[in-house]
Amino acid sequence: MVGCRYRGDERRRRGMIPPIANNFVAGESPAAAVQHARELNRRDVAVILNLLGEHYDDRADADADADAYIDLAETIARDDLDACISVKPSQIGLSLSDDAFRENLARIVAVADDHGVFVWVDMEDHPTTDVTLDAFERHARETDGNVGVCVQANLRRTRDDLARLAELPGKVRLVKGAYDEPGDIAYRQKAKVDEVYRDLLAFMFEAFDDGVAVGSHDPAMVDYAAELHAEHGTPYEVQMLMGVREEAQFDLAAEGVDVWQYVPYGGKWFSYFYRRVRERKSNALFALRAVVGR
Ligand code: FAD
Image 1: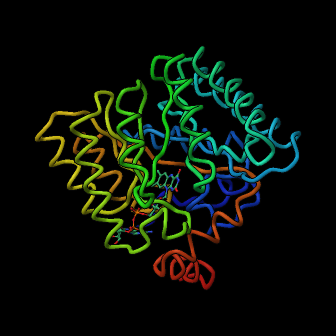
Image 2: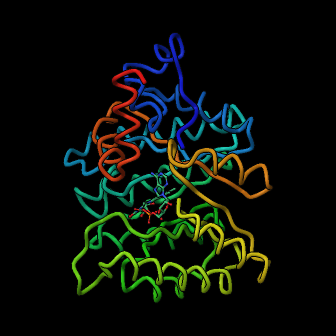
């Protein structure tokens, strides 16, 4: 179910993104993203803001996006939004060097933490896992848990990683995994990934004090998280993408579940939108209906 559509003047304010794409992307500017956040906050949905961009091989680009996140953290604090940010390691320097990534993440976290704004670190493909978890660990300790990291159920290593993360402050988002990883290090069958996701979720509800972030649109996983919460009392939140099962997001929020919508924005929207359309027939049909005006 797709919601939060915008028309006319609203679309112009959001920038040049066509209406079919702006169900999945808040707009090109930070102002559009902030406006979207305000609208969701009114419906008790909190927001994770992500500036679109990845795999930069020019340091100036990585530094510029880190600067943009710093400005965004200041805006979130100034406007008192129920929002946080989520950064991709390769967007802020990891494609250049580990040091470039560490330096930019440290800059972002320092300012965000000063303003009380939470920072998530997205997880990319498997060669980046160690450096990403190490950076998370450093900042989790330094900020006493004002950062979070994503882990992927499709990676065979994740059960061990979770045992390490359970000892740290900060939040952990469990997702199924978006990258096509080789069979020796990853489960490749969807049914197996689903089974592992459930097992890892159960482990997290038992072992994590700071709460569990369920990064999934899957009703079976969201229901299972509610069961585990009832059993263990561990706090949890559900995170879903903008434009995906939005009615479910609003329903869960109305039931009192802590719901966060992951909201991408920025000029590099096309490839993100294309991925959303490719991954699911209903999104493609939706895009087609928008094009033919039905
Ligand atoms: P799937 O396993 O794809 O689908 C299961 C069921 O969910 C479907 O049968 C259907 O009932 C429902 N569903 C799924 N999609 C839709 C849809 N479009 N419309 C309607 N129903 C649907 N991956 C990473 O590798 N690294 C990250 O840092 C990362 N961060 C993420 C952050 C968030 C907030 C979210 C939601 C996902 C993130 N992902 C990340 C992506 C994740 O790894 C999965 O690829 C993606 O979420 C698809 O898995 P799923 O569990 O949502 O549902």
